[in-house]
Image (cartoon, rainbow, N blue to C red):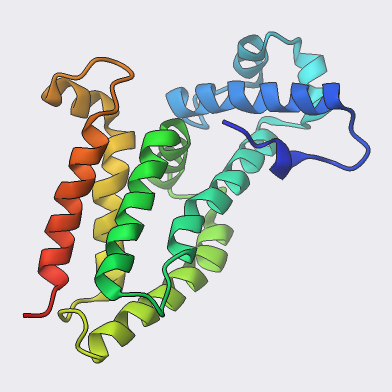
Length: 212
């Protein structure tokens, strides 16, 4: 995890930035394991190897740390959808989006679980982000997909439900990593299944979307 560029504050020293980075990385471990409600400042401080007063010098509260992590994650999480190009080949664009989402699940599993935990709690701390930036982006890209459908380049479907289905199937590999590894008999750290998953999902979605 690297949120240094996102959380860098003017006038901070390298050591201060490194400590903020250590706190955020430790908080990610704690939040993704225990959820927001089950996590405490003491747990985060212990995980970071810092005293509680030292941690509170860099972040004012548990909420401050959580908000920083979520804001960074939302920025990263939306980037694959932003890259969906209305001028590209529709099927290639959808397949590319699926691959980018799987790469996010592979490379940022803790962040995915952090987001999932927040949503399961009713999104009390990120509702503004969901109703704002995320909602606007989904509407924009759903219109792109609908335009492809109107031009008869894709089979008819509800573009928003298509996006939901892609989110569900790709993020499953992060949020339910333990279950996936048990069923596929994978060792911890083995990521060989992501390529197989990408090929399967591309085939699943793109066969259904392809005009005959």
